[in-house]
Length: 484
Image (cartoon, rainbow, N blue to C red; front, side, top):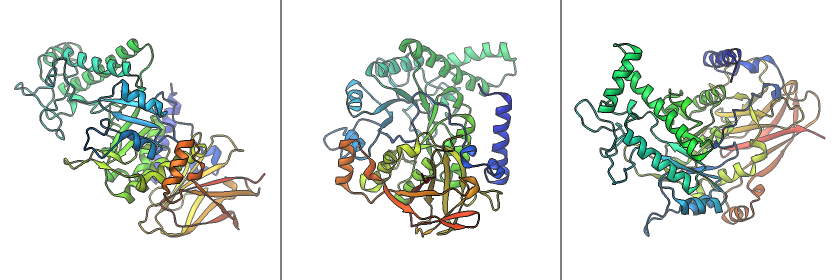
């Protein structure tokens, strides 16, 4: 458990970022491995920094005419995890395990009871009408947290998933009756609220009662499932942080976030704020970006990973307003997913130290350990190091956000690294997609060929070392280490 002092310091750090627009810790002039923050807590079921995850709503192909194939895609994208999958059975899990994949089932609102009915134990308004979420079509009725019938349905589905052998479970719409078009006024909620009033007074908030009921539902059902399994079953959840830029009240009820995120929250400054929330609260975060633009998806994916989070690959993406689901191709994205696998040693174990770029760093923060010059003016640098390890290499993620990038310079402050000691630097970039190269890497399990190494020559510039950086597409990782 975090101490009150630790919590206060974390809140002050976040407040400083919100006020000044840069990492307050970076102004103290320490070397970057001392700036590197403690790792986000190790959470069972949560992805590693080097994991490649994807969502498959259902196992595909769904029929003879379905052009998509879940497990073919998993190999083409070099996937390590299948998250947020409905209708998972033993055959599905067995195939995933044969491919070495972590497999996560999913719980939603449209689960039928044993008789096939989908309206049992669901949320109803004051007139007894079934209600759903404003973004859902009628017929997909939300479960009532106080209805024993719905609890039985939930437990039956989750125990079936356990019997199939899943590793974890994703909960969609975790806020349940607090986000439907009406709060629930079914007979179970009405009776439960009377008891609630006896504890909280006759003027107790019905809305707060509903929120407390949902929280109790998740705590109690997870505890029952853990008892049945004889172990902790990790649960991720679709938190609203991807829409509002802040964690909602449901976050403490789950192990980590697996959420949809919209365009306004994938800009570098917004992603950095979200990453700060992730680190401060110790909650790993995995996102599905709802966009069909290939350039947008590519730079968003790179920026999310550079911030120490994960993004589901752009495949089987739920799109708003009933638009068709989006299925990206290996030609569009496998160079980046392969690049992640090729750089596992430069991702895992490395933590946030400093970020540089427009609206992220601020105008003149003191003792900036790195900066960028020239180029497009819309590139970002994310310094990551092994906390407290002065001997380990330091990595700097570079992400180009301009549609037409330009070559530029990366500068590192000598005092923030190893002073006057000689260093070597290598820029690692994803090579252009080559099907045969990727097929060979996937079959052998050796992904080293999916990162191209470019030696960089340091040029002294006063208290800085300068490195020429070519145009990025859109991601590169600079590895800096002492010259032995």
